[in-house]
Image (tube, rainbow, N blue to C red; front, side):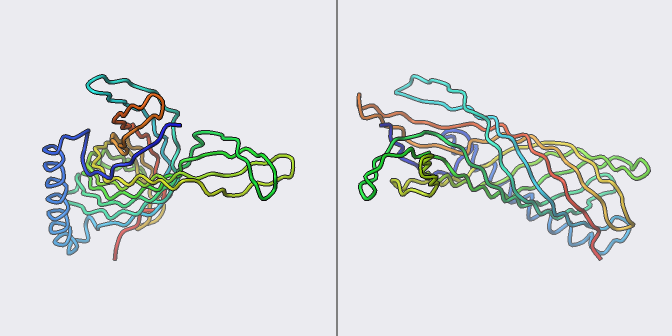
Amino acid sequence: MPQKKYKSSFNLIGDNKIKTKIFIRLFFVICITGNIIGAENDKSSLFPNQYFIGAAFSQNVRRGYFDMKGYRQEVDKEPLAFWGAAFARRYYLAPWLRLQFSTLLDFGSEITDTLTMYFPSENNIAEVAISNNFFHFSFGSELQYVFPPEKAFIPFLSMGIGLNYLSVREAGKRNDEIVGIREPVAIKDSEDKNFRINMQGGLGADIIITKKAKISLAYYYRYWHPMRYEYIRDLPLTTAEYWESYRSHGILIGIAWDEG
């Protein structure tokens, strides 16, 4: 049976550590500068800073890469859906420009295999579905170009970078149709924990519903490499580096309101 030897890592793409350091430094410079400018802008009531809270959905188009001693093989993966919630803080830097800091928490799951297992205590054989359960947390910063409002409609474009934490835990669930049992089954514990930098861009609109409140809709496209581990096969005994790229198409919908 193939085995996965997970490697916790903190880089952008592959082992390019130079790019990673540049993006991390840029990320924190944007965060610090934005908070300073935003604090100064709190004194202005013409373009008040805002809060946002809402629901998040993303469809992640995935591709896997095996690297075996210089030979690379690409593998298409099934799309993976994430559901969760988002919170953001928006600072107006100018009437047409604002800086947003956001946090996103979402989850996903996929069935990767089905095994037939014997349960000695019951003298019974049953199928066990093996799945990967995903937990994702991200903190991002982005610049938003705000177009002049059209009546109650305020469109905007966005571009930014983010820092992601992704945990992938393997789990098993028994599915015995004869006796109607569907319960968790203990399997060999394995978990992948990674920090990743991403780049993203998108568009959206705020729909004014009251003087201070708006319905906010946004689409974003995110590119990142959230997973990397060592892949081992028993027969023949071979080892390969494996990683995945995600091209995420996400939707945010929620409420934005002016502070104060």
